[in-house]
Image 1 (cartoon, rainbow, N blue to C red):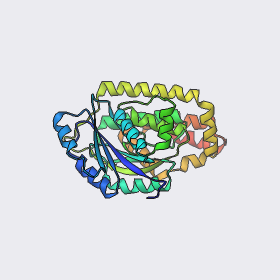
Image 2 (spheres, one colour):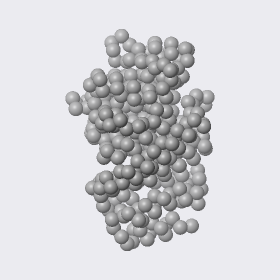
Image 3 (cartoon, rainbow, N blue to C red):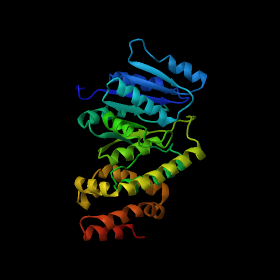
Length: 311
């Protein structure tokens, strides 16, 4: 790792301790200093997490009281990392759902592209709850609208590497970022608006039996709805700047369709299997409409796109 790439890791945890030790071991194998943010866990979890701090100062356990939410915990970790002079922060959830074997791949990409946000894209097995899958695809469509782009195929994965200079710019500007389960999506969209490139890496995701979820159905769904409302109107305010960025990134319709083709097809096939043909095509229609109306090139690609989506 070069001097220009000085990463650390942040593990936000609320009542998750069972998987943290294994995650911590993998992070330490990569030579990463680690901040474990105990976000108001119960007493038993607090004791288990506190025991993971080491004497040589490479693993810190920081407790927040009261509970701040996932976003609040990660943002507190950002502050600690930036104050210590780290250039990048790897975020990984404490619930053990993400395949830790993807860690080295994410770090290699982050070192090769230090100005990019490197994010995992979940590859689910059969353990994924049906309701969770549906909710994710709704968010995917809204993110495509909010960014006027298909470049982000998953905005909710909690396994990613942030360039901290760009995070600091968002914080300095006082932009509102969700403090709870709305955090992952909102910060990614806001980084994308700042022309931070998003680079995706496939990560296997499993929902272990008996795994504790911190997702609160009504509260977090309301927060996510409010977040998408904020981002949609934020997109409208930034529309000229976003369109300029889009033109600079690429003006070729086919390039947009073909980029990240493997991951894109994987997401599409998963949506088709879960939702069925008609529902998945309906979800994609706003995105196709956008490219049809705003595409720089006219002609065959536009006509072909609509023929492909018609029942």
